Picture 1 (cartoon, rainbow, N blue to C red):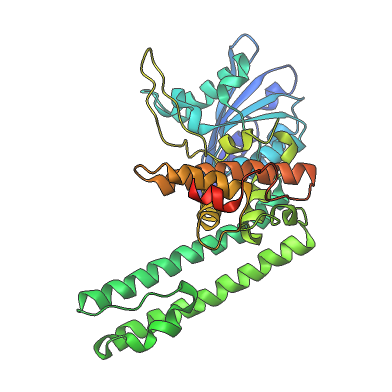
Picture 2 (cartoon, one colour):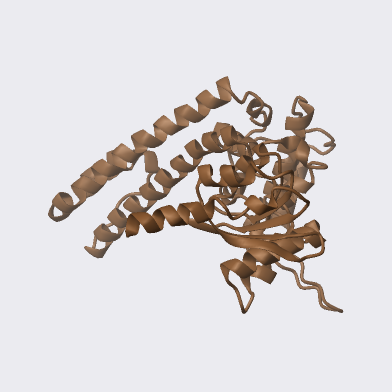
Length: 373
């Protein structure tokens, strides 16, 4: 019985869109992990077909390859990158809606997969701009970005392990010396209390193994920069921007020419302030934190380095120091965030223009005068 029901389901999947092979319509897809709900509308908003498809490349290709060019609308999600590329290869106009901006769907009191698919199709039919459409990066960029994301997961794992060791030792009345994460096992091994060596020994060995894997990923990042993405070296001209940050920035943006100008990159990465003005009220809010969290964090870390004692003199550093000198609550955090936004704009400009970076371009003051300001 189970085999027959599965065959019937497959047959049903493969006939959902057969009747719509001709004509102009808009298809909304609410993507699920195993099954996706579809809803097809004509240009007047009438529902022509709705049903459920398996979230499977073969099934989707067989369904959509028989259709003439249509507009297909979906939300961002785990499966949206490969599905959007597959449907584009079938000749369709694919619109990927920014789920972050679709409260009409996410906060709907009658939310369901069927309703979501209908709303996506209806918005795609009436006004695509309301979907805040995004552009997914290419398959190759996504695969190479997986190297950086894997490294980030290991860094998080290492941090959790180190914090656990420090916490256990502290709860027994001892403290471990401060040191860099990459030399943790070497520096603190002899300071572990004898009573805890048996319990903490495996943790220290794991930290060392994780450090080795992180180093391997660092070498892979440098290899990618040297062999596949030499454009990253244009951004690495900036003191404080290393191979990891440059490559993550390049792979996340993927195509620099899809931005009208460099200033829009800051908003894309969530480094501009939110706004909620109403009447006479216009409160000062924090940054939007839209876009890629990892790249945003890397840029902020670069900004902190540039503001620190090891940062080299540059127009960007001087500008950040002036912000820092204003003082106030969380002055350094605010200055680093603002510098990260300017850094993103600068990196994009160097990438597009291919210019040689001039650290003190446009500066008239001496470093001493700036530092005293």
